[in-house]
Image (cartoon, rainbow, N blue to C red):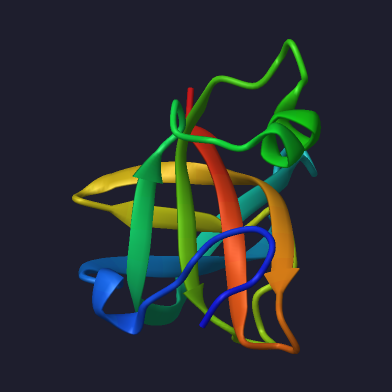
Length: 116
C-alpha cells in the first residue's frame, strides 16, 4: 500500500506494541486527579526511530518541549484517539504526542516521546 506519507508493507509491522488507555480518579485525601492505565490493545507495528522523519512529520513535531523517540505505525483502531494514552514498546513506556490517520482508516501513526 502506498500513500503520500509512508510506503507501508504489512510485513514491515514486525514489532509488538501495547496501547494503554487511562482512567481518571481522584485521591480521597487531596482530591488530586490521578491517571491510571489499563491495557487497551496489543498490535503489530512498524517502528521507526525519530531521526528518520519526513518534512511533514517535522512540522507536526516541531515543538521545543518534545523529546521525540519513536514513530509507530499500526493498523487502524477506532479506540485509539486520545493523546493521554501511552505505548509500551520493548518494555518502555512512551507518551503519545500526536496521532495521524493514514488512508481511509487503514493505519494510525503514533508520534511518541519518552515519559519523563
